Length: 501
Image 1 (cartoon, rainbow, N blue to C red):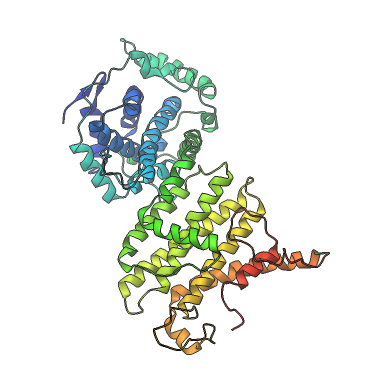
Image 2 (image 1 turned 180 degrees about the horizontal axis):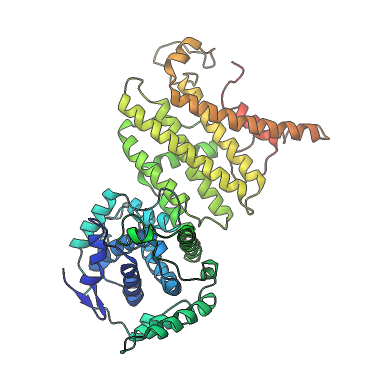
């Protein structure tokens, strides 16, 4: 596996990453060396052969993971260089995500075929400091094995001046390290002071970080853990501040790299979700209840895909909202709501394994829909009507699913049989026998959303000064961006199922 590219000895550079899986071998010096290697090979990250694509992808994911969990060990005089390294590895990961979003079915694309979308998203989530980010042990083993087997780059021609590259102004501490003579202690202190003074000019985001050198506070999986345990509250605060700096820097870089459109494309291109997106598009255009026919064999894949969506949509890169982005985000969230209602409506009551998977799917889908709703509610670019439409669409989908589960929806009549009345009264005994605790959760959420809509309609009715016209009395269309009255939303909910029964 020994190979070197130009000034980079890749066999030495990747060693801390390969050994970190089996013991506490990753320390602050390793982080600095990896950051410098990323800066040196920037051109190779951006332009490389497909044969080396797997190496650069795995290296970017693993580097992002180990740097994020050891972020408190980044020297304060290396923050500008670290920002450039984050931009490079985020660019490589987003490039692979973009390729995955463009075509899931493109069999001609052989670049990094063994790295999943979830493995690409987890390191970014970890860098942004979001709960649930970072690679779990199973994915670490997979990516480390892929990195070992990947073809190392043969040549990386790196000029000496590229080592000292930073956001705007070259880093003096790196420039001093590139000289032939070893720097003295006095020179190191002078370089560190100059680095601190020029840091706000090189990267405005880094000015929010602590202005003093960060002590070597390590995570439990590092060599300096015992030494860092002796530090007091000051060291812990420095660790928190450094992690906050990494998170805010990566959030700004994601916005700069236009990651919002990439993650939305990935979510809308998930293969199993596609069928529910198509059903929702048909239901939205016709305002007719969608089909609730589920395939139990897809439950496992749907659980994985909804986890991918939750990771992608948790990234702080969806703003600024545009009408197209709002519509795409609403469609993805509603498709998952339709998916969980379909899975529960078609579930066999004695299938315990499927019931557990469905419960996990419903929990994740409801959480995702609530997260999207909170994003709409808190956004300054999405008006209040968008959030109200979001509640209306969610309540309508769940009401249609509940109506179908209670066998109130009309089905195809059997040949040579008398026509049946579709709106017959519900049998409460059979209803209680056929409903599970998952439907109780779905019904409770539906009632909460409907209650919010009715409260809004009540306020509108109290302040109304005119009698509703025939136009305002029409049910609201299922469009997230359309301007409706609260009364129109109320009529759409009432038309979802015969609530008078």
